[in-house]
Image (tube, rainbow, N blue to C red; front, side, top):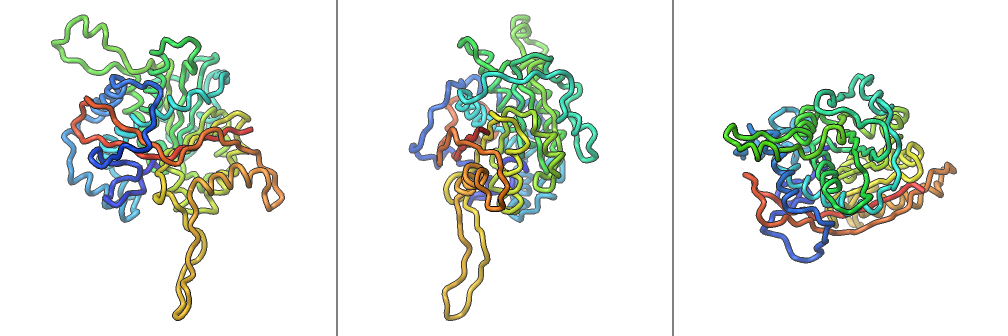
Length: 388
């Protein structure tokens, strides 16, 4: 599922996104020096990737919103113009926030990374799967063999915010004067139930290609015109897959080489689809990845991410039988930290430990950004786990 694509707040926009006009100054979180100039570069990626969507057709956005409100995801993401409109309208703002989030968690990233020699098993399962779509090809190659490569699997990452955010994070690291910052390369696999292959391809190409210049640009401007990240350092693969229906072997091939797995505005929607299947999926992750793998969960905070469990109904003359409501982060902790080591079925699951948790943070956009569409701040909860 695309991050946050299925859920909307009271105004009909995706959850976790808040208009600049309605932001309070509480719960501010200071990020690790992702600059305004870099945020602007990330916005430029979307502008260059989808020029036909500017100015944005508001009627098109309303159609997408209506389909999302009706939970008709086949229609909401069944047309190319809908996918592009979603990317420029919502993924753009989120990409800036995600770049900050990746910078925030960088201190928790492993200090050593696996070597990548040729195609990985995850790439192999994409290429040979009948419903898998690999969209790497001409836009970039897998990082050359050697250390310093961070393998990231973005579950629900088809809409492109994670891809651009990670490219921005890598640019941030490479531009830093701090010695020893790693990773030096990123290998990204974006997984989604909808077919976002064209969006992933275009965004991947634009982060690894120098932006277009006017034919009247000076030689100095041409010489200074470089891509956000080098194609040798950043690769993207897309896989269309329903996480809750994927068999364990295929899921294992997808995540086994990962250093970081992300669920960005996706987990709450998985729980909404099926609590038992989502719980099974989360439990299985611990047996499929290596010790030290990180799991990053970002989602809407507070009441937007409460999960109903149990039957409902009412009887005349008696109290209504209602569902029990649990915060998403409580279910997550119960599954990963508690159930994983003491399962009532008698099965022992690898134990995750929580290394970072915050129930509410704000990402606030800096002043001075240029974008033809109104940008929005993002409020979110964040939880980071490491497999022991």
